[in-house]
Length: 269
Image (cartoon, rainbow, N blue to C red; front, side):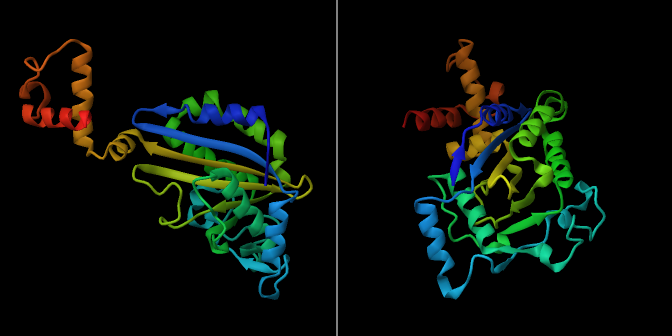
């Protein structure tokens, strides 16, 4: 999959990843990829297409739409599924489409993850652009509120509309189990991975985002519990304002001096 440069999408990705309200931090990325295969992608696709005598058009099973798991986000009634009307074909797509989705994931998370063994039932096809937009907005507003609504929302959807024409797209989501989820670490409040596939443009727009608890991420990165992180933060603030060990009492921190000294020794090591 070839990444298509788009300054507007890069700016939106940067704006999303700068959103932080209280203990919550958002990390987001929107990228556009060409589906025109060449070189290694083309060779890999031919190899996969010839396995077990299957063709690229053979259907693969998908999981049900996320709209059926979270109907409150959807403007549609249960059972409606865009032009497909909720038929069984709503839960299948071609092997070629699965190849596109897996290749997009691998390109987006390269070099940390390889999704070549991802199963088709880890993907879903979503009912419409309107449902997807509503679902994204609901998640964003739950964390960033009016900061998202006033500063990012309109520019985000305008940039997506200009790049991929979402009303003409098939929309898929990636919903892995915890073991294979690249966002499976502690402290994640929610995450989503949406693919907008425009067949006419031969292009996929990938929108991935997660909201995380900053305190949980700091504790995980440091290898300490959240209470120890609080002590470190307090200790750093006191150093900034000129306090010394003699001024740093158990009464000020709620922790014993021995704990603070052990933390200081750990930081030196």
